[in-house]
Length: 207
Image (cartoon, rainbow, N blue to C red):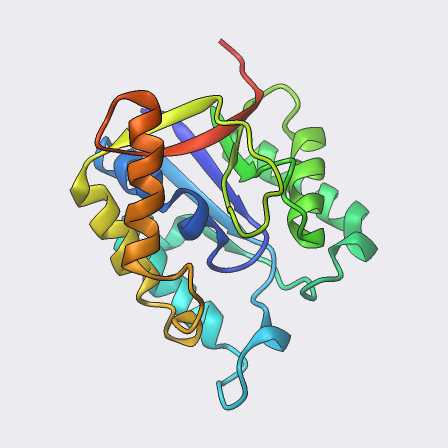
């Protein structure tokens, strides 16, 4: 059993970037921790309750198979992570001490979203002695080096889709769709000789 930590800048980033892999990790009996750094209250469409995304995250991670006790929530203001860089780093260092992960999944270093950049950069600082893989979010990646792959079965993708369907407030986005999720997984599968896969950038690999 491995201890695996998912670092998500915002509530649905982990599911979008590596939800299929999380489903597989859980199925295989690994101990999964999920840390989200913003509940994105200011990014909600008009008419939604302020705690909507927090509630949706709790439901989505349950679908993936993550115990509720392993969900860690922070509430940094969306799009302002750079102002809180040191505080975020200190949170990450505490997470390292508390979780002691064997593997950490973070946004790709080539992700252009300002909040994602902070979690990727500070994640490397905090977990510099741990294996790190950068997950893919094509709408934010100008480039992406597919250096590592995790092959998936259709059941893993279905769990990812069902988890994302819990984000009712986000279903208007084009990338929160079964078609997109399956299409990208098919492309990554072809690249590594499987039907489906998720791809990652290798940031640091400790063997």
